Amino acid sequence: MAKKLAETIASSSAHGISRAAASENKLLRVMWILLFLICLAVFLKSGINLVLKLQKSEMTKKYQLDQATFVLPDLYFCPINPYSGSYPFTLTKEEADLVNSRIKQLIDRFGELYDVPKSILFHAFLWTPQVQLSLPFDLLAKYLLVRKEESVQFAAITDDFVAHNVDVEAFYNYENLVCFRLILSDKLKKMIMNPGSTLKLRLSTDPYLAELNFTGHPIQPIADSNGNSVPFLEWHPYRYYEQLRTSGFTMLIVPPGAYPSLRFEESFHMSPGFEYSVQLKMTESTCSEELHDKFCLLETPPVEFMNSLSGKRERFNYSNAACYYRNVNVQVVDEIGCQLSQRPSLWEFRDYPHCSNMSEMTAATVKRMRKAGSGRRIELETLTQKYCKTRIPCSYPIYSTSYSFGKWPSAGSSILRYFAEYFNRTSVSKAEAPALARVSDIAKQLQMGDHSAHLEGIFHSYVSESMLSVQITIDSLLSPQVMLAWSYTFADLLADTGGLLGLYIGCSVLTVCEMFELIYICVSLLLKRRSAKRSSSRTGDQETAGCDVGEKQALGGENAEEIELRS
Ligand SMILES: *[C@@H]1O[C@H](CO)[C@@H](O)[C@H](O)[C@H]1NC(C)=O
Ligand SMILES: *[C@@H]1O[C@H](CO)[C@@H](O)[C@H](O)[C@H]1NC(C)=O
Ligand SMILES: *[C@@H]1O[C@H](CO)[C@@H](O)[C@H](O)[C@H]1NC(C)=O
Ligand SMILES: *[C@@H]1O[C@H](CO)[C@@H](O)[C@H](O)[C@H]1NC(C)=O
Image 1 (cartoon, rainbow, N blue to C red):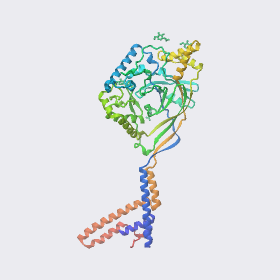
Image 2: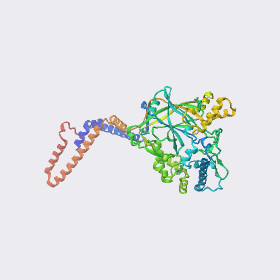
Image 3: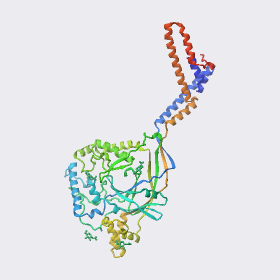
Image 4: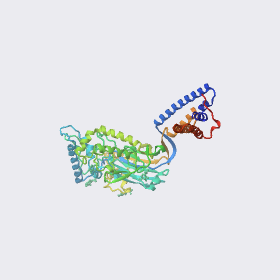
């Protein structure tokens, strides 16, 4: 066996060790063996470093320009203040009474549910959001929220001096109460991708208009027993101290078919009194192949949300937001028994109450909610965000914008004409848009010249507080691609190990196979010898020759260049 070992070492493709075997000089031989061992140690150390590097590997991004084609996003326009400043002031007595009685009921319900002693100084503004989020959605939509007829004055794609109207529909949701979404046919989608075409919108924030033909049946303020109250004009579903409220719109830019989440999707704020030119840009985010199904999802099932107004099921494409909403609710529903407030409702949780809807909550869930506290909820949200980071779609568009803006409209006669003739151009009736109807009348009066300075002031302040214009173009039909990949992969490890093997011990994967072959031969020789000994102890000496024969056979016909290790 020693012979075999020597032979293998001598013919090994690992350089140093074969020299040790070949060398006749004892000193040289020792030196070569030492050198080999040193190189082996260095190699092992570097190899361990590489393995550690693989373990600690981080995500990197690689940019490639003009690699992906632009995909048109879905566009949503969400009023920052979802309450109308006009409709709720034109309600009939019956309508106003209906809303007011519901508000009264909810204020009483708050006292019951949260067990608030009347003596406690507890300002009404703390629970106005709760009352608003507990009102029946159809009541909100019908009497209190902004409407398309008043808010969207114009939406069209202009292309070669022709304007094609774009349909807009209200999208009611638990997150912002109401948003407006553009509905683009395939033809219009193609049209907006043409260089030179622009999507134009003229929006109104529908602010309070003192000159409105007020019916005298107001919405009651939300009041507490200490005489504090929050008037309707200061309501906001999620803001508490918002005395000086901002108005305007949030433009949401959402990957096609995905849920329009204000928290997760790209958004862009626009204030009244300005015109915005927005360029849409896209970057395609993709994951390299080794991340598929580990870091990202190749198959992304659609997600079902519940429409807040109709209670119907609505299907959306999978998105990071959908992952988050689902998984945070799985845990919150499990621990507390209600769905997180201010978040979209998923269809699968439709039987659970919303944590801030007092019409759905019971005293028991309120108790559990209080016990869990807000700390636990924040913890769950953080956990979920981490979890969803490794469940992104393997390829999805990321949108961004670049924009410029200027004061708009300039005070001139064209703005008077715009409003004076507003109803000649649109199919919306005056009854559907009471504020616009009133402004149109004022504009007519101003045009005729018989008016007070007061009326002119009202007109101009209304225009600058309500109107905003946005022109959207597409930056480029080719978009850059971002490739997510591990900074160091297993393939890199193999290549580097190969390099080190070659560098330090001058061998390759095949050498490793030689080693295996050697081990195999040695083991089989040992086994043969043992069985030979056993049989010889039984039948005497004649069998040892058989052993030699066996050995020779095992060595095969390779005896031509046998080199022996003599020591
Ligand atoms: C609150 O819950 C009631 C009862 O389910 C429902 O009718 C109402 O629309 C909800 N309100 C909001 C704002 O979601
Ligand atoms: C205001 O409304 C009342 C009743 O709804 C109507 O009689 C009156 O003509 C209106 N005034 C104006 C200026 O539109
Ligand atoms: C997303 O949904 C739209 C329909 O709304 C569909 O045309 C599109 O193919 C979907 N995209 C993905 C990536 O699933
Ligand atoms: C707009 O319509 C009104 C009647 O509703 C009419 O008196 C007026 O002349 C029209 N204006 C234009 C410019 O067509």
